Length: 243
Image 1 (cartoon, rainbow, N blue to C red):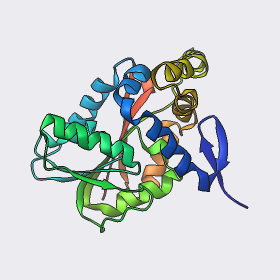
Image 2: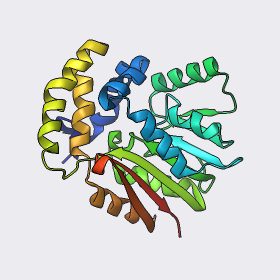
Image 3: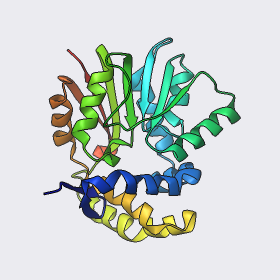
């Protein structure tokens, strides 16, 4: 019997998810910044600044920025002197990031097409691993977490920022209205693509709540793990350290 996994608004065969997520991000790659502004009301820029300040990248540190195709996080960390490898499973997203880096005169970044669940990097080579709004798109989260653990040096740091549900009174009703009615319309207006935006909104709804995700991080080997919430839990920064 084949495994089924969540693809936002439906369950699909696990073997199909990578390809279908790839189609989503190929569809939105050229307008990724506009998409993020539309989905977050521009708040994603503040969240990313907050995230990098938590990572505290140091000059000379080797950092793997996974699912970082367009370079938003990598650029911020490179400005602080870190040596950043930007990885993404989607080449269209990487191409956007490479073009942006050239336009901004940012060099020294390494760009590598990688599947978060099956990294080709050697073990124990990175000082830090970051993934922002990307882990909900993998097929098996536990496999991606184990790979993050494998490639980090002993004492290395893991940071993940991801949307999640919150228990705020009335939040579910507001988000239901936003994801079911408004997001498809935004997707059609921006990229003439309702289904991709519907997936992006629904994938947040189905992502594990913070306590469950924190348990998954610990199970992967990050025993010293803590969670920082932003906007009452609508966005969470999860960080873990190896023993």
